[in-house]
View (cartoon, one colour):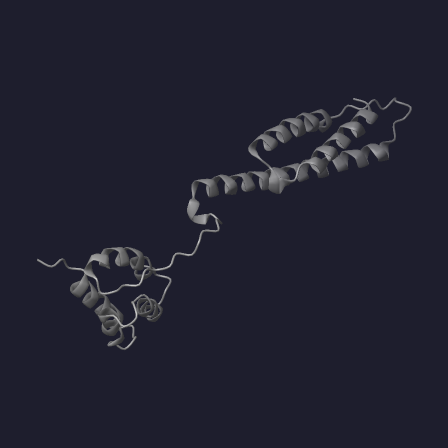
Length: 183
């Protein structure tokens, strides 16, 4: 391979990198890049430059080989970033819990003493009740806010001081009083 061809091949590698952003790389882009880069790097990896060539400049040739090595390293880094980005996109597609959808805020239905609405209320509220990231006092405040104004349930909840020890007692009392079906 002539020296001019070596320079031309490295310029092709530079153009490939300039056209593809690793953060927006798809699996198809990565396969295309890998095929093109591997072919170019293979062709320039062990160049046999004609030293009898009148245009041959050993310093320029050494510089060109060093720059080819820089692009070889840059390719490995880019390939790793592309694969990481692809894996993140694919895992987010499978795992909707990490989705950044702008869903409307769910408002908890106020419980109004009616045993027929207890299951609907509890179905919503138990997400708060089972949330380990919330402390008990915060859960107690949510429970108080979830009671309909001037209802017996609200009076019952407010009859307990809002402490960590009282929260399980209030929940149990509400379940016993409103959650059981009457004969």
